[in-house]
View 1 (cartoon, rainbow, N blue to C red):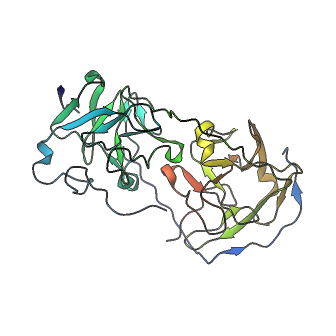
View 2 (tube, rainbow, N blue to C red):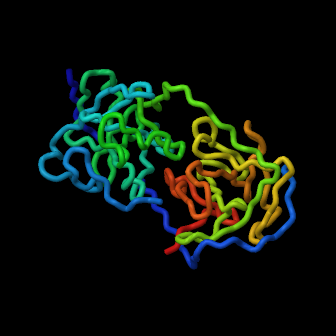
View 3 (spheres, one colour):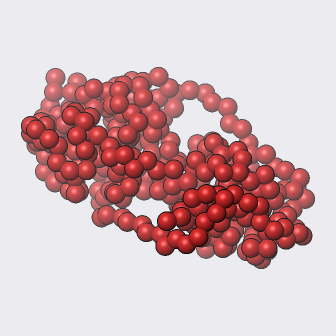
Length: 319
């Protein structure tokens, strides 16, 4: 049985001023040590129903069609909300449920297509309390919310069982029928970050980016916008650390290999895995897909993760 609900209903922009870039190179070593104590696709997303651009009115008569939501079971997760065709529906931790507010616009909306209501919302088969369904206004139309949380599709998910957006940036999650995050039903092993004898920090330049911090092997080091620099505090724990490995101080301290990094700006904070390095207060991380110089797969994930510059700021892309 389907229940019908008539639809009743801030943009964030970021600009970086960039100058100068070059091929990858290792910075001049600075020597010495510090004690342990102290890529976004631009392709426009398509709507599920008609493959028309999502950032604008849908073509033809689809604008008149109501949005159909249903509850489905997919392997590895507790029940999730999907579209009528089984496309996974997500929520974003950077949004707000009370009041309902989306923070995903512009470049973000090219990856994360807002679920638009059309002429209303229908619940197919029950399992979702229709009183928890509402909408908010945004440039593309009226975005559906569930218990206040704005809803989205991920551009790479097109059919039932596809969950490429799950856990992205530790911020995006398939939504359950009550508006919460769908939970994993699988037992997974967690691998603790490796504590080296000596942790190294240096500076490198990679094509397409201004100089940023890496370890001696060239592995990119990131900062997370949801963390705090003053006071230094991490918000990446649990599931988040499966993709974002804290950069831990070595057993014998930290060696600074670049004179572009101020030794006094390097510190640590305590966490379950050990002492996590900070730079100008920002906790430092590796991304699980980056292993060697030139790999920056974590850059811009969730519009919250960025390679860190030697001064602790976000390392911008080149113009």
